[in-house]
Image (cartoon, rainbow, N blue to C red; front, side, top):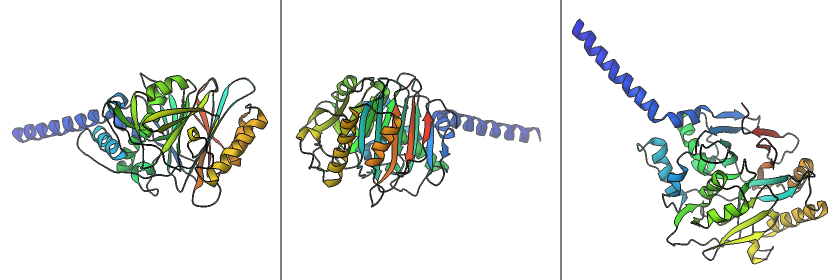
Amino acid sequence: MRKLMIIFGAIFAIVLLGIIGTVLMFWDEISIIRSITRLGGEQAFYVMDFKDGYHLDEMLEEDISSDGEMAGVLAGYISHGFYKAERETKTHIGCSTLTCMDDEGNMIWGRNFDWYDSVPIIVRATPKDGYASIATCEFANITGDSSRVPGDLASDFLAVASYYVPMDGVNEKGLSVAILEVNEGGQTIVDTDKKNITVTMAVRMLLDKAASVDEAIALLQNYDICPTGGISSHLSISDRTGRSVAVEFMDGDIKVVETPYVTNFNLYNGDITAGGVSPMRRYNLLKERYDVANGVMNVQQMKEAMETVSQKAGKWKTRWSVIYENSSELKATYFWNAHFEQGYVIGIHEKY
């Protein structure tokens, strides 16, 4: 009996050590997954917290030129080498952004995200060596299935990858960034001696590391920026001073256009008809609103401007609208599916 107890005790100790070792190995991922909170009513959305930069510096050194490569590398980090995955996601992002100042000289920024379906995850990040940020990520870009949502263990682990697919965001320094599709194409794939990163990785890098438009441009110039999801895109970037630019990737170079409004065509070419009727219409509407207000709006006026260019019918609908205010507390106000009656305020330190 004594020997049997010793044997069972040894087995129990081995199993316990294995469990403890596994928990310690996946501690970061478990902490992130435990933070996932479902909010909203008919339009569900999710909030999750990252207390560190989740391998950002390592990712920037990986030389990643496609979503499939990014998925494979991330799968290795998330699974700690136990699983490798590869996928390519094709998305279409027909959106609008507008940058203004309020009466007190604070930047205010609005963004509509237009797509055919959506599983939004709001990622709140407080990296130790970077800037705190709130970003909106599209879970369907990771899974390729808009019917799949966080809630089971496999999906929750996939949601960790949301850190690297932000569609828009703002950081504590007042830098706002969004990805918008360029309908006429034009984002060329370049191959220099610089490291490659995808556009969504670039957004994450800027949120974590850039405090101004100038810093954002300088960071982007260190990399070859590759298309994400098989589409051409450009970035709308604004900072606390109210400076706003479109950063475009053409002819193997970065083109910077000063503009407070951005839709779905390359502004560097100077042809507002290039992206089609809808992007031109939304561009002209935002320009008109901006000019009438002389570039000065409050939150209500920004909400009305974004509602004016929202898409409420057809396949490509406005899935979310978000207004970022440059206030003392980092926060964002969200509206879902072009319904502007009720906004959800997400603060960087709020508990849900």
